[in-house]
Image 1: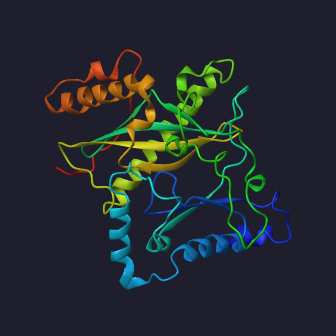
Image 2: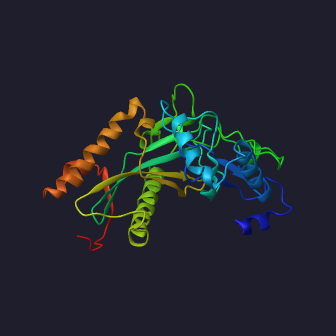
Image 3: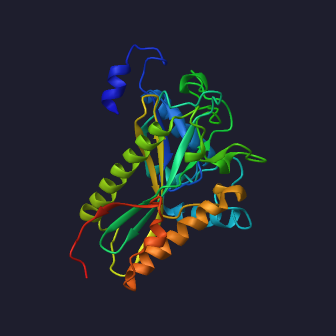
Length: 303
């Protein structure tokens, strides 16, 4: 990031590399900000600190308990405004902002792809081919067009940039689609298949790397399976970039119209994971069209 800032010295906001900041202990899009310079990042922290200026280390437990109580009776992630507990500021992720994203003809809204992944034992990894395309609430604009150029302010209109449906008020008509149902006139089938192949390759690499090198966070267990939700963003050139991995994916955002997609995921998970445990081949879960696609099959020696 420091190198990015050095390269951006003297450049206009349009010419700089942009970043997206995500508090590591929040979810559902809360606290996300965009920035392109050290001054803009400092303005973000100053804004958060101004909301809770009197907190310190000994107040962390009290703050977190208070935040928990304040959220009782609300949906997960709901809060008054965009409240972020100050202690959360010590844990955050900064990622390069992907610009320009792939936009569909006739639909100027940015979208990301939600992919469901099944991890079995130690270790087989399957990608569920029916994927979701989740669209932002408003037409896409470059990040510098929706952020303040005042380095003392972190004001940002995130509606063109965040594709989390939980952030959108009212009906989500057209905000969630089955990825492979996008008309070929908007996204050719070959391009969809290429994007899916990239997602499969990346997913296999991610889970093997996590299993081999991050056992504290991802422990593979024999006779067990787990479902994850991975989010990818496709850029204008057609490259699929990993945004994040969710250990507790929110199936509600799929919507009522696509509930069959989630049902198919769990049917496939039972057929492949449970069926394999009982010595069945899991063909029904894989289906004729290969809905459960094996992307990694390694033996980590854990019995």
